[in-house]
Length: 385
Image 1 (cartoon, rainbow, N blue to C red):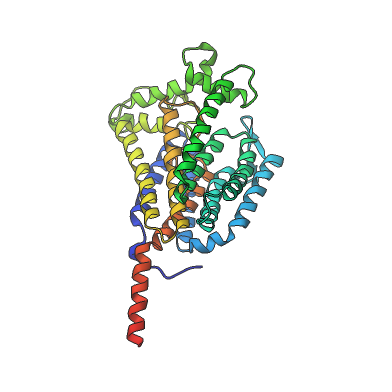
Image 2 (image 1 turned 60 degrees about the vertical axis):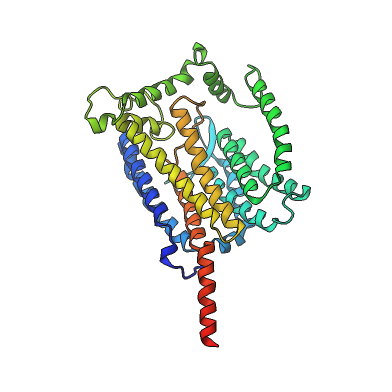
């Protein structure tokens, strides 16, 4: 379970990036809502401890429990469906009294772990109809429970991440081409349906967000566009160095509560206003560096499972960051996606740290480490003989 690793194979660069982005997150959450700063700090500390512990546990041993993790994930999502705590019209949380837990955030990590082992076990017959059908069914069960919450953004997020996982696993380009020929027309048909007033495919508030993005000049959707307009105003007002660094005393969009949920969905607006272009660029570069480090370690993984885990975590960080920043800057419809390691949300934060702990362990058992280990064992054998 726990091996003796060589310290020089530990990815301290990734650890440094995570500490930097998490520290920025604590400061920004405190700026948005001072009463949540301590909770965010405690979440970071807890996440770091869990990450370090997991980084020393063999991920191959953990993946042996793939079906237990998959079953537990389904049970948690069923509990949310039956007894979930409702907020803003969506039942996505389990309330334990002292803490609220969102199983969907942990589900992303479990799905990556499960399919990492599943695809490695089916590496030889991945492109067969039986394996593809089985993987589609196994994905569909948690996806349905997440979509039913309703949680469209995470349904789409997990679907996109799954596509990355199966591509990394070695899906045939012929199958990818055929899937695109089917998926693109279906997406066009879906969009044509959801813009209709009486459609039943998505909730009315979800349709309103899409319509507000497509037709921002329409007064009917003013409430949906106002948040993003205020977010863009806040980011633009920060200019190069931001109001905090420049000491600007101009009225703050953030402090005036013109941007709702500025500690979660619109935390990037707080960064733009308080620390300007420099602050925003720093956040983007750190998130990009984390995603690239995950991919780099995936390329050096000892097996396909490790490669999939690393690339899966890198894709979550990249896609969630992209969606959150697109919403804050008005480049996409409002989705309610948190900014990884920055937005307030302890479940999301700790789940990401769990994933990063696994990534660090993959790095500890890289192909370079195994080559050196084999060489050391060979040398010892020769000495013995």
